[in-house]
Image (cartoon, rainbow, N blue to C red; front, side, top):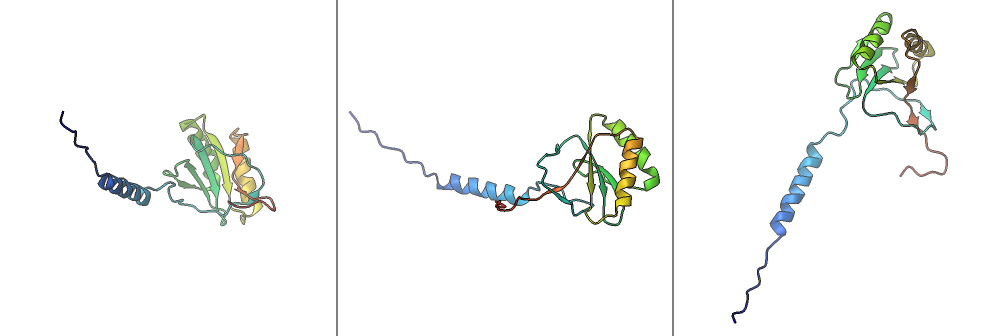
Length: 143
């Protein structure tokens, strides 16, 4: 009976290709789109998470300018205070099940925040979330 010859497959090229693909996707992928309006959020100890989809985001920057957008920030538009009620109604009509998220800069004056909250009340948007940064408790590591 003839002896079988063992076959040996070199896996090095396949491992090289796998790592090259991994590096390619890690360097070219954007996980979060850049924000058009950046704000410094106030801190809180609440650990309630807002949903990542089906949201309407109202943003007030430190200059008191108001912006409205969806969760992926692709349709961010600036809104004047006088037009805020109609903008909220328009956005809620586009997606009635969307959750409204209010995102205000920690340095904005309270009058601008009160104006947005009054507009939310006038448009019967009585349930909304305030977005904050989570502050860690003392003695808790940030890792």
